[in-house]
Image (cartoon, rainbow, N blue to C red; front, top):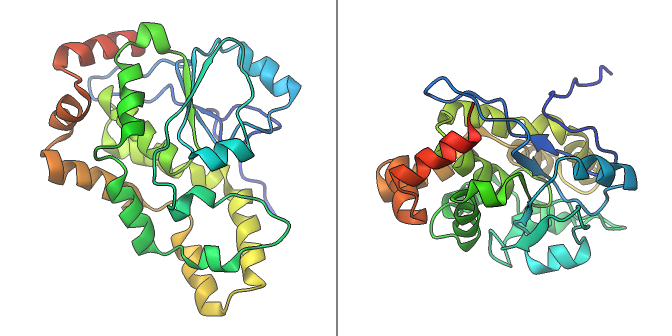
Length: 262
């Protein structure tokens, strides 16, 4: 089978997956997000000594963790140089999505039966509105000189991190269509993880249950659409959203852009 060619933004780490530089994306005004300022990732607990040495060259100031407490206790973040580690859970403790990549000796078939398109859309619809985690993330973004470079992550680096990446990138003027393409890259960078889950599920699921899982589990355009549309329904447009939800005025936003774009 032909091996997928991974995108250049993916860092060559042995002990962590989906660790990507968010730089290089073009904004509406013709600039680009600088490389080396924003990174997104899956869980970091498996980083090797060589991985840590590589990441220390990034001179990270912040590691922002979207996971809930039990996730973080099970797989804690390792120290990365002098970076400040901070965790604010992005979804509720009982939410099904928080355990999707937990590796157990067995396979919790009932857990994976919960994944439907409707459940994911509900999760994404709720995430961007009045969320303490994203409020804190965007507070850090308001002072880029103090808090960047930054890596934000959850367990798979796809759902919670995907919404956080949307907020960061769109604040800097990256078009939603570009953000959506970047979001869907996780289907490529996590392909092996997804396939492992599918192979396990095939042993326990009926054909109909398996079909539902492989339809709902990978990232889909309508998932991120649900988050974006929730913003539009509640605030009318993205500019109003970041002003009222996060206190990012036009002046603050211009400062962010001037620091983060080239």
